[in-house]
Length: 134
Image 1: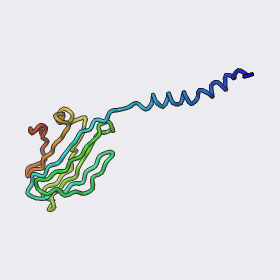
Image 2 (image 1 turned 45 degrees about the horizontal axis):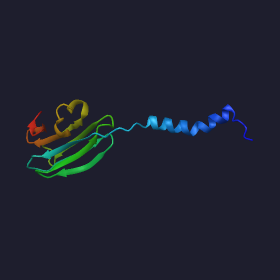
Image 3 (image 1 turned 90 degrees about the horizontal axis):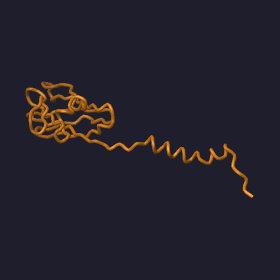
Image 4 (image 1 turned 135 degrees about the vertical axis):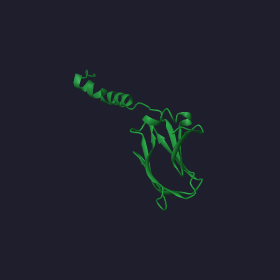
């Protein structure tokens, strides 16, 4: 003859189910939204970059003239910022730039989820959709 379970035994039997339900509820599936940024060297000289974000680091990279560095960013990882320290080999052109800031560039880079920066003799310019934005 099977004896009825006490309330505490009954609760213990349901603990694995309760745990699984809590786990499923807390692990909401978030779709990644990938954006890209790139720096294109339009200079006659090599451009040296060191870039990083909250989840990635790009060690020193030398971009030859007419070459580029492209990097993907998952905007679901906050804060979504990426920056680069850039200079020419003779340091005649140098600067520190935020090359991706979702909160500020979302409206500008919205065409194709790409922020395209061009290093030119007179500065760094942001293009989106083939058009100069700033």
